[in-house]
Length: 138
Length: 304
Image 1 (cartoon, rainbow over the protein chains, first blue to last red):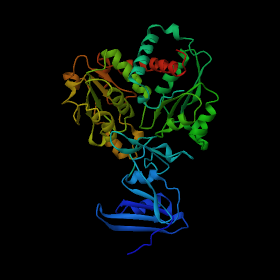
Image 2: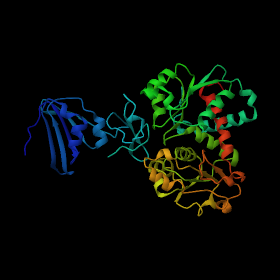
Image 3: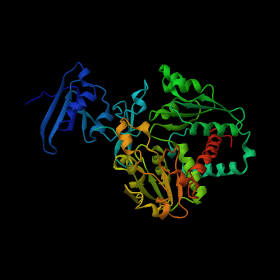
Image 4: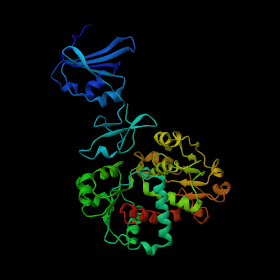
């Protein structure tokens, strides 16, 4: 299977196999007008299988979303057919309006216009809602 | 401006200062009786509570200040659908400090994000109740004289018992603490509380379903009520509510200087016969709550 290379745009590579669709939705890529290629289960020497997303336009990507899903994902900015920039990811300390708290007792379930914020818990390495401490659902 | 949302908003040193001020208030009440003159405390209780609200109000009145507020959501604009943020924005214009209780977890944090005056979390659902924890700490300090090296038993509802979570978080900062966690399987301490405040600090702990097998080890026994309002399912509540009842018979093997605490109100988890035992400290604990809240109000209003 062959997907044309892009001239100006973004390649999100080294996505854990099966996670591309989740990223596609969390980055709201369905709202784009440009071409977006979503490749699943691509053979990879390092990972065995991986997913890749190619976006045929240079857009602002929320790197926190990618860092949260897997900080080993790579993001290449393509300009004039060559890699112009590589973005490095890390586990973000906070996630703003990326996840919603699943705890029915949390204030975020009733308060309007509230920022949904999850913070990385240093001891356990998990994200928790800053309001009620509930762990982010996988 | 500082808010008190979680007991860990206060350092161990700040807690020591508050305890010292509370002790001084008990010894020299006349020195403090005008300290908050012309200051107003708003008690915004979106969930009913007699004890905590009255304790806050008594604390402010004894400092010479005034109080205003409401004692249930039905008598507030929340019943009309007003958000917490809007309520706080309005009340901040009327009061110098706000004590707030709300059934939703995290509501006081939302209030703190919007507020122009200090917010004190007076309980948010099953989450946090830092002024109860300050009360517990003051009681332990007065009754035992020290924190380091204590073996503390928590008994009853350790899952939804917010006072338990906060006291564990606070006590874990002291040296050589040991916990004994006594509860039915369904009401065990949540894993995040254990991960953050017990395991990460390598504090030894025992989990058990039997109070009889561990009571002789304890320096402090913190009893809790199984709270109907924390259950979605009435059947679960009825099945678990009488899990542990502390009686004089159960106390036979306990240490002579055991300190029995309870955040109150009690239903039937401590037999009334225990009230006359010198080890029962829970009514003293309730009284101390007013003094530590006085110390807290003074600190947050920066008038001490």
